[in-house]
Length: 81
Length: 150
Image 1 (cartoon, each protein chain N blue to C red):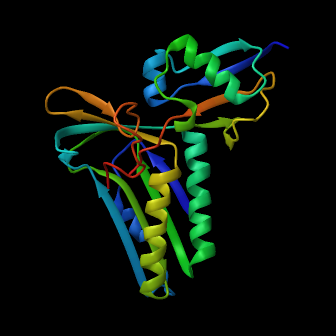
Image 2: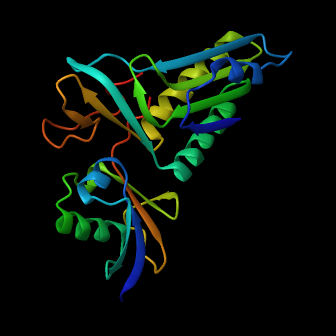
């Protein structure tokens, strides 16, 4: 089933994508599947096991279902301080 | 309890004033500053970028956890975003408590958890013109959290 989601990009992913955010139509069932789809399409260098994912501004597991209208953020390794 | 992001310089004196409390016999503050060297490379400045809605939520959760773990009175943490120069304050955390043990321990907890969990990223600009997103290298093994900073 096709869904329309918003993906926001930060830091190294924003630079590798060349965009802050985009709307994507996908058949990915989970957040993990969506990342793999985008990683292949845009040649992101970070594997999923180095990232976390947020759905609608909350951390979620990679198995989280992708629903129409969701906002997803793939979170590169953090480096505050 | 308050965790904030700031695109302007951190006013530590004003934040400290906000923590005044007659019950507090101790106030411990930690100030992280931009350093001129990381992993042997000369640094000339850096950029911080944050995923604001989740950074603020996760920061508030950390402050709340600190309150649960230690007998503290007040706690504040502010993290910069934007471009910083050498010596600029990148993060400021302070805790008040009746006694110093809890204030030291809680301040340490807050800064350590902030560095490890809050979605904030640091891009270093080196003297030779190169730049790098810290902890995001994909060669040379897994870059550990907490590397390269305050």
